[in-house]
Image 1 (cartoon, rainbow, N blue to C red):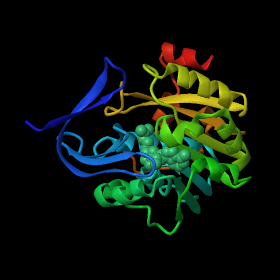
Image 2 (cartoon, helix red, strand yellow):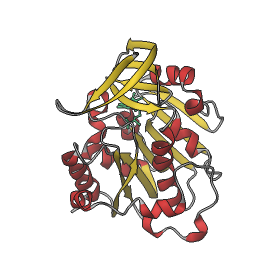
Image 3 (spheres, rainbow, N blue to C red):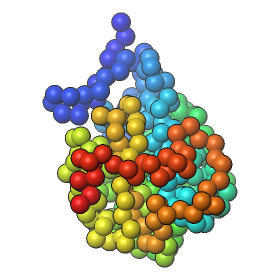
Image 4 (cartoon, rainbow, N blue to C red):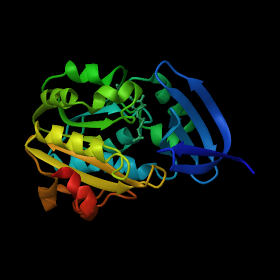
Length: 275
Ligand code: SAM
């Protein structure tokens, strides 16, 4: 029959999938890490019993986190990923020829280690010479950085455990300092069905710091409710005003330049979180 794993979103709702086997399980210094083989979605990384990524649908999240801000910026050269130890966002960043350096700062080296071992199609570009991997707290890295990055992506766990500080106004203010004068940042901001208050609060905080603030969505089947949000804060460039000649052909499975625009068209109940 196989085992069934459920990520509970509330006491009354969860997302369930069949697991063939467990490759690895351990309590790291920061979180519970499980790497399992699912029947439907390939290998899957869980942290504290929450789905982080699966081999089959990871491209949606990683492409949408990377390409929307990277095409918004006219010439991204220095890029930072906070979290993202599975390497998926880095893989997408490296598809942009303007990028000279991509720094990844994940607090948990075990995520990087086991992603390389069991998720090679996702983590395979972490060895690229343009990539610098640091095992450190992203909050501290941001606090110590000034005028350093063109684009910053916050690919964090949900606001529990080590990621709590990554959803604070102080962190977004630090990002503002860490970005160059026309920098762009994006953060994953969970789902509007169960985390509406979080999305509303983050949007308000970012709006108080950045002149351009936008919310966009993507459909990710293995994340609770399937509808996921990303919040952009930008010092100058508007993701909805990218010049047509800025786009170039890119090898993707979800992101297109048309979807870049369309992902900012929000259902009314999601749009209401931004006013
Ligand atoms: N895509 C996933 C999602 O939305 O569920 C998240 C990806 S997972 C790779 C997020 C990563 O954030 C984890 O590897 C975790 O170790 C890292 N993380 C959590 N708190 C952090 C912090 N304070 N600094 C740096 N990385 C952190």
